[in-house]
Image 1 (cartoon, helix red, strand yellow):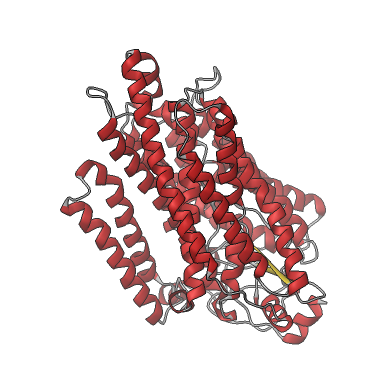
Image 2 (tube, rainbow, N blue to C red; image 1 turned 60 degrees about the vertical axis):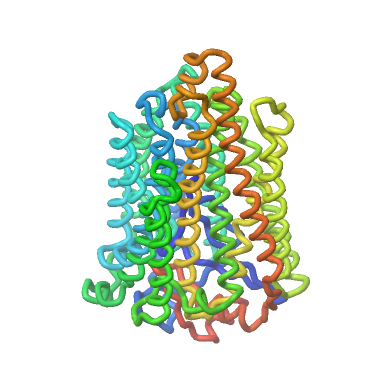
Length: 594
């Protein structure tokens, strides 16, 4: 449940047509697709604003080298993004082998996304200091080492720690792949190449559960360890391809960047406060089912995390460093509402990805590969829904010159997905195949409509000089929502099963134990207990999406001015970790728009 793109990833692109309408696009880190883009020719410089278009520095690579560079980038990106969801269908098999608890089941996914989120803001600044390729190749090595340790895991604790290490590398891969590929392509061809690379996101969202089922060992093929071991040769091949294709490109450190500037300007305190508060909440919910929801330790962790986040918000408004969040994130009501919608969207999407796979395996008794295939309505529906949504938004903008299309898609997506998860509450061990297909499909289509529009509204609420920190904030919130969703859903599942499982049945998600060890009558009760527990997750998800829908009704319908379109296009750069907004001469920007 993946994404991934935050501070260093490819910056947003604003397209202006003859009518002055704009369309914003950005690949999404957890579940990403790219709308048609048109990037500027500006280059990045950390912490400073530059006023010149530096087209001479754009490397001129042959089509063959560009092709190989994007093949290597796509392979690496596919591994990093697929690794977030591939475990959804193999986790029950892993639980059986290690006799793991439900808490450990949850943390295999949480650890990967938590470290991926925590280290995101650092990658861009580090790439300014030591070079893009150095950070990318180092991230690939970390990811390979983490994958190798995952494949050789001897216990669940070992696997969780190895997944955390792999998440550190995956975050760097996702960030630097988009940055590098946007920098090596000239502006006229950038949209075409970015569209080709964005197909990788769609493939990873669909293939993650399928590959997990293929490598589960229960399909008669390779064991679950090969789901991680396969990353080694593929990543090595991608490394060789990238080294060959990027060899003529100079991607060294930014000239005016230094370690002293990095230490002086980077918002370390804000990052620590944000991640500490988020981690406290996640840990508090994760252990609530074990320690008790009313225990002082649980209350202190959750309440303490909220207090730390509040302190982080106050600090972000007042800091003189390059803040992680723009000031409008705490002052503009529309910005705040979009961030809430963004958080809840990823909370629900990731929970659905992980625990819908568990439903098909443990409640319906499907093999992992068959469960991955049965999940296609959910994953494929969310993937395909983003395309007509993008077309509709572009059409609406061209006709009305406002963001009513985005508002409509946000509200419609939230309403559909809330209805889908509400209907999924009806799914149990006796459900027929039609509801198992239609209800997740409705939920997936609704969620897929929300992967672009919220970000477009979000950037429209920002000032030009806030685009860099705003992009970072948006995707930090998105990653945090995904991680929190897994932790909270896991706590609900564990707590519910604890109270509904028959006496004497261990609190485990071991499919084999439930299917073959328990007597028939006890097995029926155990499966019903899991079904009720999963229903509790859907019961939470549906009202959260409903609340987001009510919030979306109050979003402002903002106009899109022609002059703002020109200003925005001239201020977006294909740059580093903070996607620093650049000030470009208006004359050059108008010429480029034409």
